[in-house]
Image (cartoon, rainbow, N blue to C red; front, side):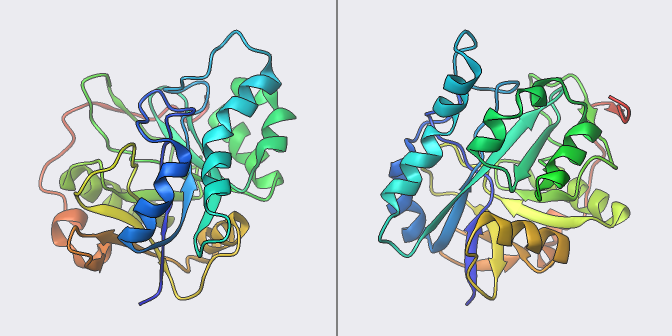
Length: 255
């Protein structure tokens, strides 16, 4: 059976698009069959609900509150809540794993970093940086921005994306030879397909997930509404594209 982990999720404490309080995810995710989840709220340069006029430390405290509420609610349960970040550049977003609240408090400079500077800083902290939903198209996007050398992995299955967008990401990841990840990008409760990473053993901490990214030891999967878990690699519509992107693709490597 293995152990299933959500790698991409949002709470209403920090994400303006989030509809669920951190603590309310626990029973919902456990009922779905997950062994744990990583809270990755939108950071201050993304769709955040954290006020800009607060001192930096207070902003970080508020940002981390959704994760902390979920973590507290999971105490005493066989469910591991871990911390992550989703950071935005020019509508291209990245999932950061392996850093914590203290690191954010001490690194206000994160707001001024380029993609590659951030990648170096995350590596120095012992973490990993994954490109989220690289071929996503939305009405509020003007184009698709790809930075092939600014990540350790690619989110090839995102439950909030169309199959063809995921297939384009899958093919892109194969060309790059990077680690594949999967997640639901969940913002609220719903009954559709979800995603995650399946492991043979439990993850003790987010550092174990970081190690798995570099070791390529996890399996990206889709969780169907009926509880069926299927490796993404076995789903043709999620791995073989049938259309090219409709938006132009830019490669802002040096920024």
